[in-house]
Length: 380
Image (cartoon, rainbow, N blue to C red):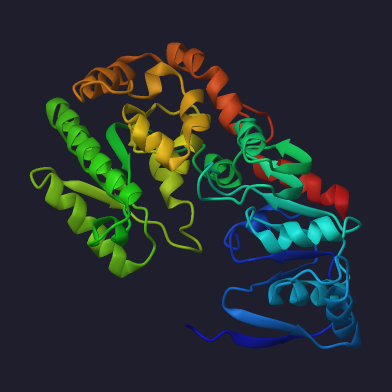
């Protein structure tokens, strides 16, 4: 277990606490000029405030109601740091973090805003019976998921995807690679490990077959194929490259890798500049559909996979042209892919109109990061 580094935080002018490292590469583009943020990272550090106020905040949290309820060390630290820094807003892209939800519920006077950063399935990605503060979702679909999981929110606002909005601005003047198909990887080293969990085994088998079929489609039309990488670590990216190259060794593959920092949005740019996107069941795939891209989801061919994954709410929202029909022969793939490839933009736009609104609250005159900036400005 890696030891966390203790850091001491002095009292400073602050009107926003930004909790967790998710979104640090782009959050500055979502903040109004009046923002004075302090960033708190509990993953690798153990932040402690240098003040009597910090000690008082921790003390009050320990003895707060319910009096004998167990409170995590992160909850106590956060309570002390909030009293120490006196922010007007607590903001985080860690939208499934229990510490934040717990703090918001017990301290309703401080606005807490959680911004969705990935699909929220009904099986693993967020705890049930949650009471959330202000929740900024991708679209309306998450509301149905929350109802299923008995999750409530004080305020639910579907604003779309922050990273997608930023990428759309970045690609306004870029040309589409009209002969390119992009495959969104769902690779993880544990997918190919021994004694893998049943759901991961299903995902791996599904992805391999879907990728081979994508290769056949690309080969038949003499197109280019790019892989939008899933993993961030260079060593894991090497394994990912070997994984896909072994599946279709006769096709030259372009790999688009994403890193935290300046290249955070590379995966989005790669999808937005491709003519067709294929994916097993990726957050990025749904985001790109929201942007109006031609996207084909493969997970829907297996009801068992969709149910085990807990993503039926998202899959049910997709129009039939963007998903494989359940329990049919995989030969349906070519028909679907070719239909999307040949479909004119006006027809496709009409077919996905309802889905893109439900999934990503798009199209919209203001991108998600602009909406978030306005919300923050109204709270500080």
